[in-house]
Length: 331
Image 1: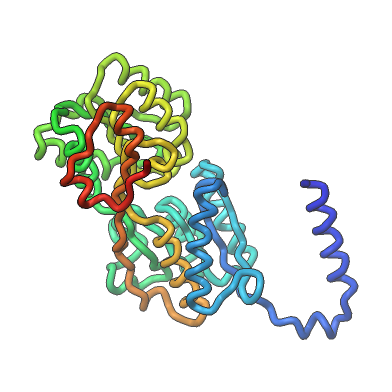
Image 2 (image 1 turned 180 degrees about the vertical axis):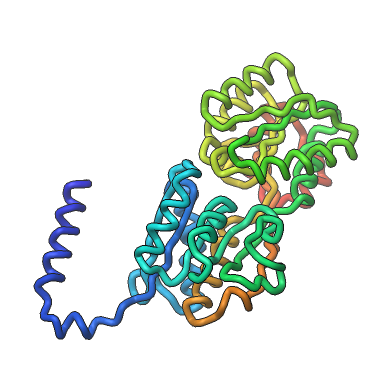
């Protein structure tokens, strides 16, 4: 397929070269959006892209018709983001959409003039992306879809499902420094308030480290597992869900990507809707709005998803109080 694609590209370029100069001059140039993402375009990202494209459509833009989107994927290698951001600038994009903290920071380091629309999992003021949520002031704005309260709520929901639990293990990616520090700070406070002991914080930035962490959990037998919000851990969701089931360890995750493939439960932002909102902001910027005048949006849609089959396998009964606030039960 790659050879066919290359031939198609060559044919397209060759055909363009043959156009009369006058005809080419009449073709209006479409504005270009640079899309900077730290992951790879897997099935879940494709769902999110549908949300992003819907947001563009809501503002009058359709990819391929009146706007071009240039995608750059870091494939989980955060250190590639600065070079990818620079490459987008060289392509003269009109706006950069940065879909993580690291992507937003890389984009802002690359330019102080090209507009940036970001998805931030931390307070964008603390990250240095904006001066304030209501008046960003610089060249960046976007959506903040994570807060300390969500971390605490996530642990609270897991404890409600397993009320006899007293010990919790936490799994984080040390490479994602800012998010990991915030997660540990908030989960420690939440655990203390609930009388839970954090018996282990396991660092997992590679597949091998994930396996090693679960070997440790098998020996120490925590009652609960809290998996931190992280792009790499999301990419390794199949491994995490499989190991949690193998070791009969009740775990809570940051989004429904996990519960849809067998994870016990998840609580977090509706990420597809978050992508739709940054699509709307990107469209508004293309129409002339300045990021400095667009307040940072706080995510409003949070969803609790429980996998009933996994709960049954673990011998857990979902209490009515939890079912009453659950957005979806996966049978």
